[in-house]
Image 1: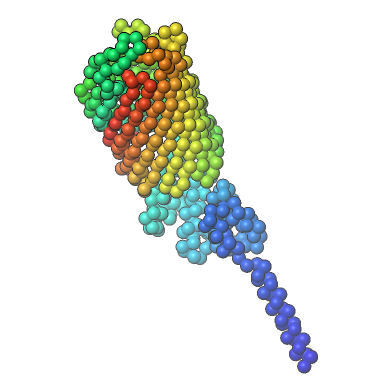
Image 2 (image 1 turned 90 degrees about the horizontal axis):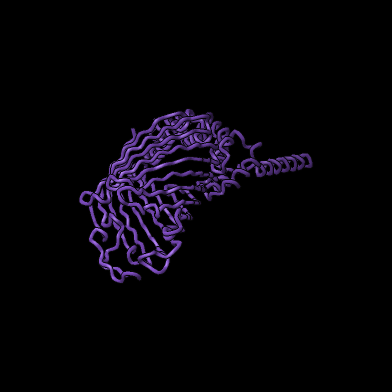
Length: 448
């Protein structure tokens, strides 16, 4: 009897030890999946690394480990884990999911050829429609990134047709009150004018790549705005620019020079030259921050009898700060800017100097790879430096609100069709400058 009792005790102890060992080595995949589902990627990555010695090589664990590393901002770590799953998993669904996430990890680590090959491999297996759309979007990004890493010319041609109920941004009032001359009846050309218009644009860009992370861009742009009935406000403009770009996938910097010339009704109107610098930072998880600064000299033409036009000349300083968040199909952007325009001729032109502060928000929603509706809202406050010599005893102050709604339709990789409507309201303490404006336009942009 004692002999049998010892066997029972021994087996009980052995079974107890085995159960304890199994409990201590229970797969962490359930907890990993929970953390990833809740978006707690850093915690999931930490848990994966704590269990790596015991569970490395298990396909389900490796997949969740790789996904956590990818979302937590460690794509190189994700590559090793996902490569194991893609190569060894006997579960077809898990293997395809691993290939898709591995292709994304390759893209983030700039292994573009490997990413493209894997994306095409998954695409060839006819995945669900939403997966196909995401893959097509990544393939477009791969092509764009390759273009950015080699010297190239880009040509674009744009054409738009629209309606504008205030082409001259003028008041709808027929009479205004001035402190010097009393009531003044405005000429019809000085009041709000509506018209149908067309815009034609041509743009050439040349990117000269110095190294993988450094390039110089050259740009040339021509724009012609033609109002069908009112030639006095037709605009032709020419803009040239050169920009030096450098940085990595986290921080990008640019420093540039730009010059432009504007004709009004085919007569000289305005010239400008400027310097600018910008910075963009990618924080991970869809967050981006940016900042920019520029200095521009704006000069007005004094020909054609407009000898006093130079009183409008200003030197502009502009600072901008931006915050962008990409969240699934939504892209949110918030920009704050502050400008200071100092009159070049304080004697007689001081009222043309001004300070302005603005806040702009935009939202893009990518329905799919072709359709993207968007919305923009902006607020701006403008304070002029001195009272107007004719129209007011007080400095001019404006509050400007603007809202724009539109739609992008990416017909194919080269042709973009778009339409938008916008409304602007300018509330000024000087009635001459108090106005509103409604515009609608639709057209296309084609890239050669």
